[in-house]
Length: 492
Ligand code: C2O
Ligand code: CU
Image (tube, rainbow, N blue to C red; front, side):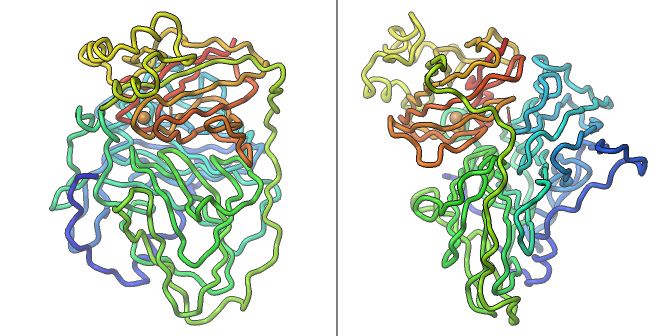
């Protein structure tokens, strides 16, 4: 967060921004021959240009899908099958990962682990079923700290057969950018400082690829707002002012409708939230949405700009609960238990000493004692890795599994964040229930695929390992992932 903000951005007119903020256009089916239940799409990853900062700034060179930022919204119905041909028009290899979707292992988009990377000029066709309804997204899994950071991502929306009734269903893909004073992309991707600290946090925040000014709304309107954090590293904590957002889904999965804690919708990188937002302020007024996640660095993200005429006088009383997805319920009594500990980063050794020197139960074997020693930790960091899972810093996606999970059995993973930093930890191929935080049972036992861990926090997750294959567990701060913070779970 020590990077300068762009100098004052000019205000744009309500209408211009409104156009930029409309939900991403739906990608047309590739062919008009649409077999029953099969939806075909084509995505092209390549260089492009986008008006990220408002005029009079120029546009910015980006990498993106289909020439647009964010990539086109793929929208299908639950139960349909997707076939997506990905064409690589970049100068380097790439893959696509369907974040949060429970796909077969071979469709997971992890280079070398689940597929050969797509060479420049090459094409790979992904095919999988939309088993869960919800808000998902897609992005490369190859050098993602640069490929995602330059703009390769897009929303993937799977609609319920019977969705909750709203006036508008809107997707906001949030991201941020590190731009120069002339709105060019700073190209210091993957630098060691970002890797050791909180990642590549940018200086310019966008909604759907543009710096927003206003989002038009009508008094009495009900919006289902699908929030997707596509940033490399920025964590958002959104305050909707006088509005009372109701969270109805997290990471695509329905949750008991509730007001967010402290009124803030918190999203670490890769996380999603679906909220019901009733427009309760006065016609003609403006209410700011503020991001308050980082202390003393609050800023106005966007204004909700009310039309002079109301849509209706009071909020509708339509039900907001979503139907559940077909997730197997873990049995906590018979579940196998596993420990996973994260450490490293700046001040990592200090945190470990403060947490008791030894890695406690969280460590596997010899590493616990060794990692408890500050000197040994510094040696490991100097050998290249910066972040460690159970004492191992990953150097690529191919590695021995850190855990093998018995297939179709319930598992509880106790994860300890022995670092001074936040980490959004993402598991592929499964959604998990977050069952406790620092020993306290969670109120909503929410299903997630990415859980934001606070410094020194201990979290238990539970799930049935029903999807066979090798699956990544990694931090979704993409600089942390690149600097070692990933591992493989084998489900067999
Ligand atoms: Cu969204 Cu392994 O990633
Ligand atoms: Cu991290």
